[in-house]
Length: 243
Image (cartoon, helix red, strand yellow):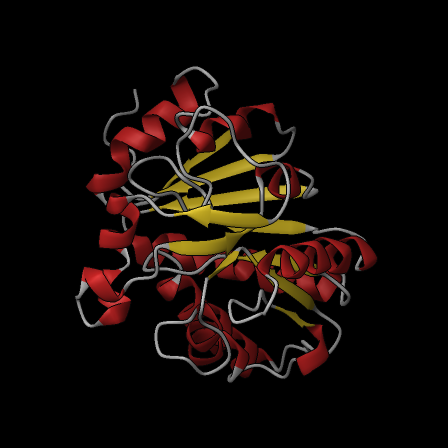
């Protein structure tokens, strides 16, 4: 893993946004895997600002988001589709058909997961997968467990993960769905390049385990150790437990 440290999350977001914009300029048909949550908010702010100032052409870029809550989709409050529209898609000139999102309202969630895998494969795979990390070491909604799902699947969310997402539901944990659709670990690891961003002291233990600990399904992010091209971008808080 290539470890990069930054004084704060704004410096991290600015650096990563510049790299993503450059990657689009070098490969207009870039396929991006994108995360949601609190950590990427600063990144998306920088990306849309740089895209608008530099007239970046997003018309051929493909995106695939990591996950979506079961039961939610489209314009539903709390859905990751609504999040992505507000934070990025409404601000750059993407073709709607190039936006890959899981539909948590699909009648058959298993079939929806299979459809998503086919769509990623038909797009030629993901060039750059951007990730966050949960305080318990999850990436996407791949929660700590005795075994992990390889491909896109329906995941049961742990209490800590639901609590961490309560802010998108008015602070009410009871409103956070109990399940979600998520890319699996193999799907994530098949990306040609992975960038994981982590901010805040609450992520420090998970980051240290991911980098210096054993590879274990009990800390899903540790599986990134087997990938040949991973960059980990950390602010001071997230790097606190590293040597």
